[in-house]
Length: 159
Image (cartoon, rainbow, N blue to C red; front, side, top):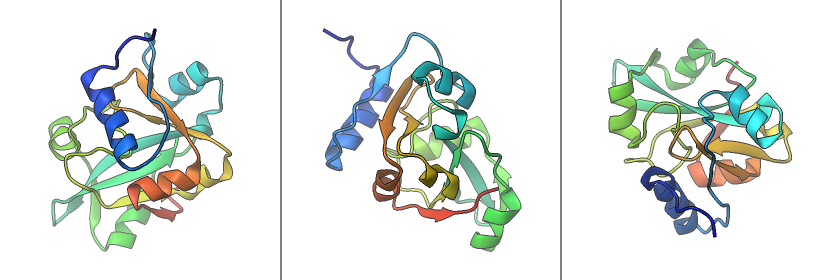
């Protein structure tokens, strides 16, 4: 019998189930705070890790979610140009307020409120990817097309 999920990981599992997905959240005793740690844990490539990054748009102050390949760095100017606003890095309190999760474990779904979402086109190259599931130790495997479905995100070049 497997260990029960932590409350944050269980919240992600419930969000997946509510949307009709059968993906399973798994927790590890080893942290996966970085894309490299997550890739090592799952035996995959860094590019297969979908990292959820929250930014603050200025001047509106609205939260923006960018789900980037672990191999890429987000070009904030590029995303800001799509929004016609400037993107700023969000602090930990802002991220928790708008997602309900702490930095290092922000999942692509199950947030306190739906967020405008941009998805890295490079994630679409993989047969399967892995995303954070509410804690620095929780992940779930999925196919890229389902990432788009579950988030309503727009696939764009983020680099």
